[in-house]
Amino acid sequence: MLEAHNFPGSFLVKLAKEFVGAIKEGSLTNGKSLELLPIILTALVANKENLDYGKGELSGEECKKQLINTLCSGRWDQQYVIQLTSMFKDVPLAAEEVEFVVEKVLRMFSKLNLQEIPPLVYQLLVLSSKGSRRRALEGIIAFFNELDKRHNEEQSGDELLDLVTVPSGELRHVEGTIILHIVFAIKLDCELGRELLKHLKAGQQGDFSNNICPFSIALLLSVTRIQRFEEQIKKWDIMLQRTPHGPSQKPIPTQADVTMDLIFFSMVCLFAFLTLHNSVYSFT
Image 1 (cartoon, helix red, strand yellow):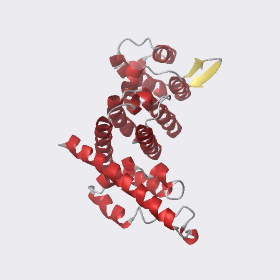
Image 2 (cartoon, one colour):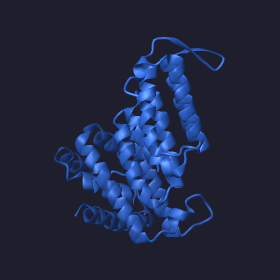
Image 3 (cartoon, rainbow, N blue to C red):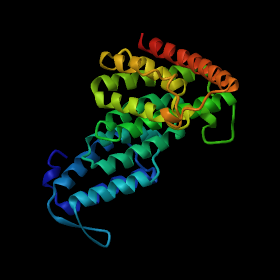
C-alpha cells in the first residue's frame, strides 16, 4: 500500500467503499486492516481526477468527504471504536469533518464498557488537536457529569444502565485516569487548556451545575499543576463568580439560596476530592 498514490482514482474509491461498507455492516474481521484506510483516503485526496461517485463526478477531496460522512453516519462495532478513532488522526480532515467525527465518537461513549472509555478519550484528545477541542472537552465533561448524577440517584432503564451500576470506586478510578489523559494532553497542547477554561467560565452564565460538577472541579484542580495555567485558575474564583445574569444583574441571595449553595459546594468538593485522589493514585 506504500504505492497507493499511484493507484487509479477509481480503484481508490472502490477500495475505500469496501472498507466503509465492511465497517458499517460489522463484517470487519481484523482491526489491524484499518491502518490501510488512512493511506487510501490520503491518496484519494491527492488524486487530481474527477471520479465517478454515486450519480455524478466528484474530486478526490469531495469523494473523501462523502466517504467520511457515510462512515460516521453508520454503525460502529464496539470492538473497533478505539481503533477507528485512532485511525482518523492520520486522515486529512477539514474543520467540519473533524467536528463530525468528534460528535460520532462522543455518541459512542454510552455504548462502551467503562474500562474502554479512558483509551477512547486518549484517542479523542489526540484527534482534537486537528480541531473541535472545546466540543471534545464539553462532551467528556457532560458525559461524566450525567454519569455521576445517574450513579448517585441509582436510576436505571436507560442506555447508561450498564455504566451506572458499576461500583463507585471503579467509576472514580476511571475518572481519575481520564483526568490524567486530559492534563497530559494540555501539557502538549496549550490551546486545549485555554478551551477548557473558556468552557467552564461560559458555564457560569447558564446552568451552573451543568458545567461545574465534581469531575470538572477535579479536572480544574489537576490543571493547576501546569505552571502556565496555575495563576489563571487561582485568579478565577470559580465558586464566588456565580453570576447567571451577569455582574450588573446579580440577584441578592436568600438564606435558602446560601444554604443550597453550601450543600452543593460541599458535595462537589467531596466528589472532586475522590476523583482527584484516584487520578493521583492512577499516576503513581
